[in-house]
Every structure is written in structure tokens, then in C-alpha cells.
Length: 291
Image (cartoon, one colour):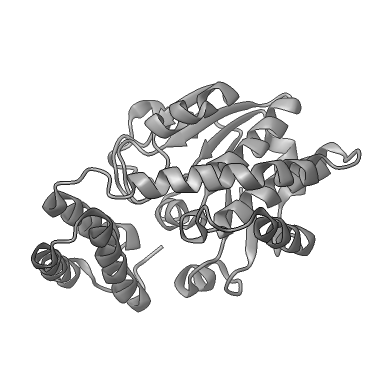
């Protein structure tokens, strides 16, 4: 996916936000903003991949902050808060006696709803009934694009590219169902911290590594998956996968730049450029398969 004019002010807003997470030094924040505006001026152009611009700006901010992981506290909040909604999600996925395809559809839907929740913003102070009501509303609404019936026949050897902390707990419902249906799951996480994205350290602390067959990394801390920096082991895993599942918008932005597949994109369209690129309305729930 190429950069969109709306990405410019969104990225600058995000750089300011992460700077405030890390420091109260307004002079330093001013310097970071000026430097990132220069990077935006030097990298932004029609036809340039969106992740090239965003990764360059975030990495410069982290460097100037001298902070490898400005979101570390927020990631912890995301995970703790997601733990509250997990029992609700699990009960709705496994309610009754669903068929294999329906069980997989429900698990995917729960994971996509997890992509919609901004656990860090909602915070620990939000009563559990708010999560309950919100989750149930989106669960009843279902998927706006639903290719899960075709995916159900392709679960023998799945490579699942994770997105953020918090929602990774709901992703485990998909892992569980794939394993129940006899499939193999290779989980892919970021090689270094970037935004609230899941890293190897995060999955080990949460015990999620025990829920899959293997965990690989993207090899770096870039937005999404930078195929030029991806380890050979990850490239090989993509080539041998019966299905690649890509979670979230950042992975969508980067992987749509490459000819890989079959690949399924699971996400909530939370920004207009991504929604336009997919061909859906804002906030639509997407489980789209490309073969």
C-alpha cells in the first residue's frame, strides 16, 4: 500500500504522542518534531510505500528519545486489560456446538474485534461490562467481508503474523481452533519494539509461545513486515505455508507490496486510506483471502 496524503498528519501526531510517553522535555520534543518533519519532507512522495515513511519517522523519534520502547507501559496496560475481555470472547466463540467452519469464523471474528479495541486508551479503569457490551455488539454484527469458509480448508500449515499487544490474547483463540482442527501454527512477531506491536519478549512473558508450534520474528523493528530485512527462516516459512494470516493494518500496508500467498488479511479498517485501499467502509470488519 502506498502512502496517502492523510498519512502525513497522522504520522506527525503519532510521533508527538510517543514522544510524550517517553519524556516531559518540551525542548527535546520540539527537536524531534522538526527532525521528523524533515524526514517526512524527504520521504513522502506519491507512489512511495507507506511503511517506508512511517518506519523512518518512528525510528528517528526513538533514536532521539534514546528509548528503545516508549510504549512499554502502554503495552502492559493493553495486555492486562485484554485479559478482562478474554473470558467473554472465549465463551462466545465456543458457545453451543458449532461446526468446524463456524468455530473458525467465530475465532477470526473475535480476533478482528480485538484489532478494533484500543486497550491502552480504554484503560484499566473501564468497567468490564463496557468491554462485554462492546464485544457482544461487534460479535453480533459479524464480519463485513467473510472469506473464512475458504480459509477453513487451508489450515494445515499456517503462518500467523501478529499485530499489537492486548489483541494478541484474542488471537490465541484462532491458534486454539487451528490446532483443534489439526493444523500447525507458526507465529510471527516483531524483531524489535515498534509502537505497541508484539515482540518475542512479549509472547514469552504471556506464555503464548506455548500455544503455537513455532515463533519467528520479522528480524527488525520496522512497521509491518520489511521483506528486505526478513530472516531467511521467515521467507522459507512464507513459501511453505498453506495459508499466511496477516493481522492488522500495518501488516496489510507492507505485505500488499509483495506477491506472496495465499494470504488472509484480518483487520478493522480504522483509517480512511486503508479502508479505501481494501474497498470497504471505515470500521468494517475484514477477513479477506487472496489466493
